Length: 397
Ligand SMILES: *Cc1c(COP(=O)(O)O)cnc(C)c1O
Image (cartoon, rainbow, N blue to C red; front, side):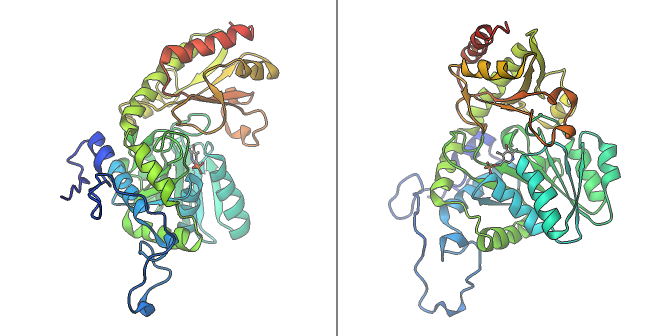
């Protein structure tokens, strides 16, 4: 029996469960096994093999089954033709940039992005390879239009953006990029394909850190680029085989397993985050709460037009308190853990901002210290009670 559940005629949850899984031909197991092997048996005459070929059963850096199964599922969930899964979200981003850009090309990217995007584009590719970069507030479409140049090859946005939750209009920016002969890539990590599918809104690439919501359990790293096959073949050959950013079969298998419950988990993240955001917004000593699901958010209307059914599990907020009060507050939390990363099952909080060299690129409320808060899957009332008791012990409530 072959299941082959790839088609968009099946719902998102059905595909999250089935796509990429099948009955194992050797054992009859109804879960495909994990293959931890570096090498595969060569044919009788190996002299015609392309040692740099991707997707071959040759050597695990060229490709493996667990990676392929995960790619099938992610392509389907993201509404894309093809997917390449790599070792981390940053391997996916660097793989995309490296494959697409060369000396003399120009990139436009958002003021608010994952820090490695800023380093990769604005420092590494710019300083080492003379790739030109312009950083713009991609919430401002006129600014995006004005930043385009004849040599602009790529526009890269992140929406909602890490860490300020800034929202950019994917449809409108895709039009601007394409009118200028450029491609659009969207880092979709904060939304996950459950809440937002950039390819259906006109983007050329959707990038995911699988480390976050798609794996969802905080125990494996991975990244993916989803888009058209011709582009992704380039990324596979360059970034996976020759730069070596291959995902381990074990991580691909863990992420495959975690992703089965993506829709269920995202529903709870969406619900908890909106509830926590409303609670934070009601507190007098909370300076601001940034969550795209709040009507008060600058990008709410655009977010509502491109995200559905929810707005993800990450928010940011600032306290009306001195530096050390922030640390005291965090030290008193009992359920919420102080750690980087996001999209795990458990709630994670991190104190950011005061020393961020990109602060000048953020809106004024982010110029003092603030928290990025990844709202987890715990009971919503327990998360709120935890914040409440920690604020009280810190004298902020
Ligand atoms: C975490 C993150 C990344 C990087 O992913 P890794 O798997 O940690 O390499 C990229 N983009 C966003 C928005 C992220 O939150």
